[in-house]
Amino acid sequence: MARSINQVILLGRLTRDPEQRTTASGKNVVSFSIAVDRPTQDDQADFFNITAWDKLGDLVMQYLSKGRRVLVQGRLRQDSWEDKETGKRQSRIEVTASDVTFLDGPNNDNSGSAAPKTTKKEEVVTEIDDKPIDLSEIPF
Image 1 (cartoon, rainbow, N blue to C red):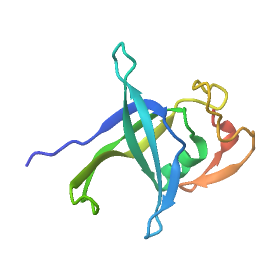
Image 2 (cartoon, one colour):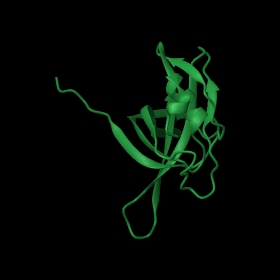
Image 3 (cartoon, one colour):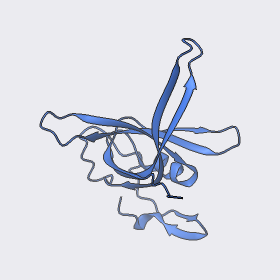
Image 4 (spheres, rainbow, N blue to C red):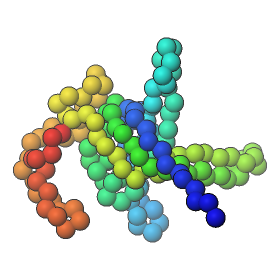
């Protein structure tokens, strides 16, 4: 039996601030969208909806805002449902992120309009996966 590959890598800018919600089972999920420029001369872009779960979602929520550049790695997921009002079948494709790389730091935000979410320099130590992390050593 042949194995399938479902992997996507996107480089773009957030089109809106991330939105956080909690599922009925208590899982944390963050949604955001990015615009990815097409390599054409007429400045067109493709727009993708992204979801990030648990700790990755927490980091996205904490550090990203509209206009920030990111590299998203993940897989495509298609949802389909029947619209209750029209009775028509609807579908949506979104990216479930497995990794999000923040490309703009708070001091080199290239969007021209979006301000970073945190501007304080704090010496905060937190634990992620049982490893202490000094946030003052993070370059953004």
